[in-house]
Length: 337
Image (tube, rainbow, N blue to C red; front, side):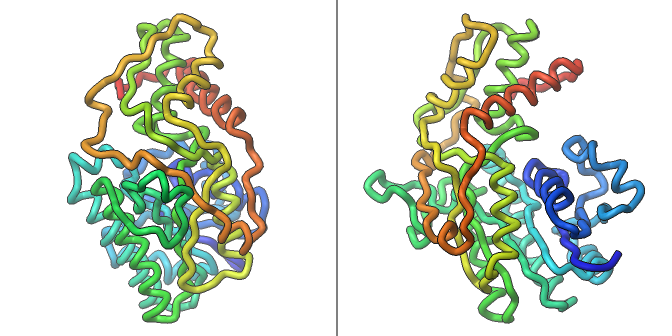
């Protein structure tokens, strides 16, 4: 493989798979997807024929918790761009698996950056942190700017603080072109069903198919979120590494549509063919504490790159619901979560 090449860690996730789609459709780059051998391939199923032919896409088995595998990956791939998206990305899960979350998200990020430092080649690197680093924010501090204090509200958020700071450290200490993003809520097709909007859409699709009683189980409906479409998010990530990439820079990125989780659910319910669906709180879906005010100031990134969201909230929600309708139609079985 020759020419510009990008490595995507976590290519089998929602964001990684959409980023691969975007790069393959909108650039002439070659893409190397870093994945664990046991990673589910559902999100990249449509890309497997291309990978099988090794035409602009191939998969490389590696694990962010295994430094040697990453050194081998970067030596073989010789990437111009690296998008580090691999993570334990479920905040609620981090309360029951805090050590695994910290290991994967902090030490895993350290391993990626250390492997790149050892191999050299001066690639442009994106470290994906999270808006969750800001955690508990007072309403008077909205919208949240890049330099707001970190007040993480979960082990996941703490792990992303570590990833964020590691990215900046490697840029400053070793002269590497590493940039960090704090993407606020982003969703769409392929979103994992442990996230609020996706579990709501999944439950609605199952109810419409007669496979679930007409009750949507929820957690905290009062949290305020700003929603972006995952397809806008990956376009932002491409612009991050191609429009005046600045070593050590860190950016908030997010959409334009802010509403409560409850109002987001009301919108999804308005799209349903069933009009008798009730809503019930499931205490198992509640976090011990919640980052309940997540509204970003994205001025810095927009001025630097010219990026802005293009996909409306209504389209994102419709596409998410249709994604789950299609999976239900295919007869898949799902856990209640």
